[in-house]
Amino acid sequence: MRSLLQREKRPDGTSGTRRQSETDGSSIAESGLFRIARVLFGAVLAFMATDNLQNLEGRVQYAEMKNAPAPSFSVPAISGGLLFGGIGVALWRVPAASAAAIAGFFASVTPVMHDFWNVDDPEEKQQQLTDFLKNTALLGAALAFLKLGRAQESDA
Image (cartoon, rainbow, N blue to C red; front, side, top):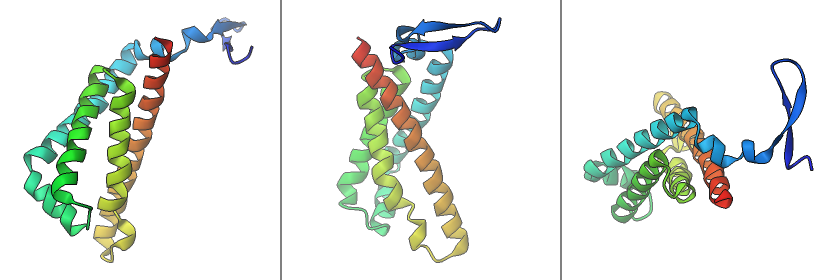
């Protein structure tokens, strides 16, 4: 029963119960704050993907330098997935698949492209560590969007 109902503390100090449907993924996805969050998150990632695709030759060369697998194929493919995911999250269309595409991008790219543990130069090591940590935070956000997308799809 506790999983279906949540205790709620009201402003007047009394407590009551709230049905899970009032706190589920659907109501969260319809909130104004969530809409702003998903548009900001998705639009920035779609911009990053577009930049990758517009500067493909440089991105492929960097991936080759990092010994990424099949960079001439993987860089445009993973950037296309990020573009799909960014647009999908921003518009909240196929949200679970969109967020999964973003999570896949960060999970696969981050340890290969920001391998700070293999860098000797202290300044470059610090930059790679910073980029690794930022990408890890973005991966966490993508997983949160994935959870909400799945919850909303199961409610439908």
